[in-house]
Length: 273
Length: 93
Image (tube, rainbow over all chains, first blue to last red; front, side, top):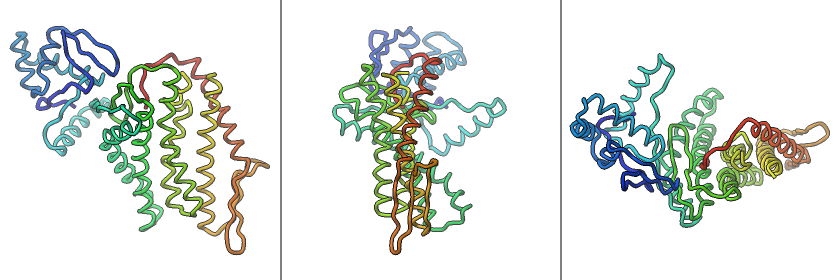
């Protein structure tokens, strides 16, 4: 959802010059018409202000100007060229989202998710890992929290107390961290390649400049390989020390091995499909 | 080359998953103080044997069989997808 009190900002690696919007990561640029340039020259301003100025400058009814401007921004956001800076409290945004979702429910649809593009430092493998983990922190925490909450009823059903509660939390954290490590693995293998971490709804992915087929396979494998290798270490430690908790907390990481197969996009990319 | 990659990746994935699953069963059996034998016919995947003061866990050739099976399944799936799918842009999940 985009509210009129929100602002927009060009994503990192995206620039506006000579009536073109250029993306360093994709290595492409797109021409803009006068309306597009007018709106993108006002990044950082509140959208209601931008819409009003747009309507005045192009002599349009306010409703038409709002529709055109928001449609343009939605398109750029879906392409991860523009980030939406949301205003207001998180609670109020959640309330607005729920209200909108309820209105859409009869149609069996959900509000379109907002795309968020984060910059990545691919100057070195370690720098890549650190910048990826930093960029995915909010996503990792959200997945960890959601996984823990989803597992707690299961624990309650089993009737376990402290130990099972601890396991639910450990599994939740491992599930979230698995996603973070998976993306970090991709970024570590993208040394010197302009890249960005993109989150859109439930999806998290690394957008990167085109690379050759061999490098592409390597990049695709690196993500699930890092997460699965971490899990394998935990499983081996759990077996060696007869520590079920350590072993079980390694299972969400190990599950990323499935992404190596053609079930997952990474496996398909690695096989050139 | 694509078949070889698909086989290698499928084998690694299934091997890792099978090992983790077998390890979880073994540690569970150890914690419960039970013996356990999991196998594919004559091929043992994992066994836990109780001795007087300790449990002995053995991972058998069944794990290798599962890995090879996974590789073959992945090759078959890759061929099927290849027939149906076109290319896609750069980006990794």
